[in-house]
Length: 110
Length: 118
Image (cartoon, rainbow over all chains, first blue to last red; front, side):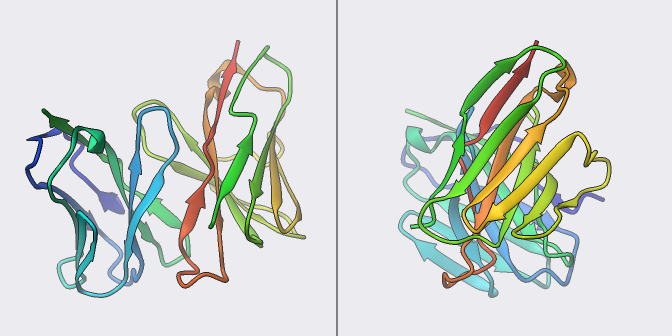
């Protein structure tokens, strides 16, 4: 079982819709969770971090964490074509390393 | 805040040469920096953790004699790919933690260096 799992996609949503990106992790002891956005040919850019169960909102982005289910999600409201990118879920492991999922490619079409 | 730079952004070299990549934290001090490698359509894989003033910690399968890491100051870490070969062609990305920020375990990434070995 991979430490951090994501559906590779692509996830296609129309402009203005809500995009829902999901991630599961295997280390029950993980406490720190991150979502990064990566455009093609570029390095990852931090979108949000989340540490507690529940929702955390920042602008059009909402991160959701459920430690009991070992599940993290990212919602993007009012999706824009400029949101088209690969979204990487990352978790701090019990060895204090940042472990990345393989990423979900999001396509927002006009 | 929390800006990380890398230089060069792109390098093309002949097989057998060595390439040095610099990673700098511009507005904060980083006692720890990280080096990742990303192959096309794959996720980031941690190569090594660079510690200021001490030896780097390498991940399993990463040759320390091939990928030399030096972290001589609180704002600079360098990765040298020695005797590069075509299979070393990849996107190399560094990151750093700002331990003085509110979220000390957040890693901020440099823009990456694309290495092509002919």
